[in-house]
Every structure is written in structure tokens, then in C-alpha cells.
Amino acid sequence: MSEFEKFKVGKPTRTRFNQSCKPFSNVRHVCHISTAINIIQDHKIKPRLITDKSKLRSTRTKVCWLSPNEWGIGYRYGNVSFEFNIDELIDGKNIYWIESIDYDIPACRFLITNEEKPNLKAYKPKLKNGPWWYNQENDTHYFNGYYCLELMLEEEILLDELLKLEFVKHHSSYCARYRTSPKKCNELGSLGAKAGSLFLAKAVTQALDLSLIKDSLLEEKGEVTVNFENALAYLIPGPFSKLEYNNVIDKESDAVKPIVRGILNSLALDEYDEAKELAKLLDSEEKIIETSFKLVAELMEYQDVDKLIESVYEM
Ligand SMILES: [Zn+2]
Image (cartoon, rainbow, N blue to C red; front, side):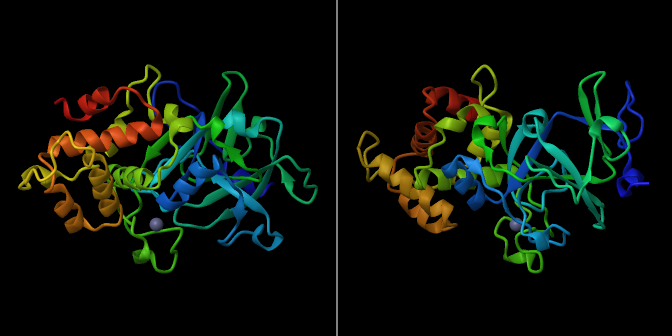
């Protein structure tokens, strides 16, 4: 009996949810904000050396981590989720069983690679004898949701294949980057919307080109996804509505845009008081919101700023 057989999927049910046999079509790579910005700049996810306990660690294999599991309790890998179609990722590649790791929820790991690895145990999802099953009859992948399915792709992933970019909750006590000292992580416990607003503020201050991944933030009809909308809603903090605006800078002035960029820079640096001081030079919260959304829309090459504002504030 192979090691993976003890994690075998259960029976799929038509009418109700079955944790031991969960269908999936997409997998996600989740990371911290700074890594996400690098990924977007490179337009690809680069494989990295494995840093935790794995038998592949000593072989210096470099992989990109992906998983279909969703963690309502929060992700220990960070706040930004890049989602891809599983069939696109595994097309024409070899799949090998690597190991199970005895975490609170055991992890079942597979290597997906273009190379032949005769020393590793080949895995055939079609056989339905382990935690990952591909049912040819209905062209659907399933995994055993009582375990964490971890896919290690030994290849870079181009963002051309990106389906969805989402902001997710970071776990409140575990962090994969700071395993032994999670409190060092600024994003620990941070909700998706809050992290998304921080991502957008940093994107503006770094002039990050979001045009190539624009579709991953929008619905098919060009509407903003709820997830992206929530991140925008947090971009300018609620207490800004109560500030005393001194109208030092006229709302038509060319100085408004650089000042709002400065506000976003202060927020990205967690310098909230500095952001407020800059804000008070302007005439209203509305002007700050409108201008900050314009700055985000510019990065995306998204034309309809009014639609962006309406979707969040219904002004
Ligand atoms: Zn973290």
C-alpha cells in the first residue's frame, strides 16, 4: 500500500457537501504584500527553495506552492491570493507523491514537474487511490478536505494565466514567513480588505503597473469584484470624514494629486498622523477619495473612475 492511500478521497455526493471529496477547479498561491508586489513587477511567480521540513529540501528543489484549500480562519502564507486553473498548471506535466507532513491538519504534498524523477513515486489522479482524484467522467478534480493538499510546481507561473487576484485574511497567530516569531509579521491577523487597501496604497506609491492583471480584479462585464471593492473602501480610513479640512489647496489645483499620493504614501508607511496633516490641506474627504481612486484606476488603465467610486460609496 502506498503512503498516500490512507488519505484517499471519499465518495462524491450530488446533493450535499462532502468534506472528504471536495470538487475544485482552481488553486491559489498566497503570499505577503511585499512578495505580491514583486510577483506583479516580474509578471510571474518564481520557484523558491523549500524552507520547511520536506524531504525535497536537501535536494535544493525550487518550487511554487499552490493549494485548493480555503482557510476561513486565515492564511498563514499572507494576504494576497493569486488563483489559477488546475488543468492549465498540470497540463503535460508529471505528478509525484512527495510526503505527508504531520501538521494540525496533515499536509499531503505532490510535486508537479516537466522532468522525469525515477526516484520518486509517480501519482495518477485518475486512479482515485489518494487525496487527489480526477474524475474523467465529469471532468472534475476532487480532494480530501480533511487534509491540506499542497502542490509544489517546479516551474515559474506566468501571470498571463492568472484568473483572480484576491485579498484574504492572514492567520492571527501563525505566519509562514516568521515561523518562530509570528508577531514580527505586520500582516498577522489582518483582514483581506485592510490588507487590500495597504496593497493598493503601496501600489500607487511604487507606480506598480496593474494593467496586465486588470481582469483578475474585475468581473466578466468589467464590474469591480466585491473583494476589490472592499479593499478600495478601506483605502481612505473612515475617520477622514471627521477631519477639519482647511482648504489651503484649491480643489482644482494641480497640487491635489501629488498631495493625495503623499497621503497614500503615509498610509502605506503606517504614518497615520502624517496622512491626516496632509489631508487637512485639502477641501474635503470626497476630493481625497476621488483622487486616490483616480490614482488606482491609472495603474490599472481603467477608464471609468466614477463607476469605481459609485461601486464603493454610491455617492
Ligand atoms: Zn505573515
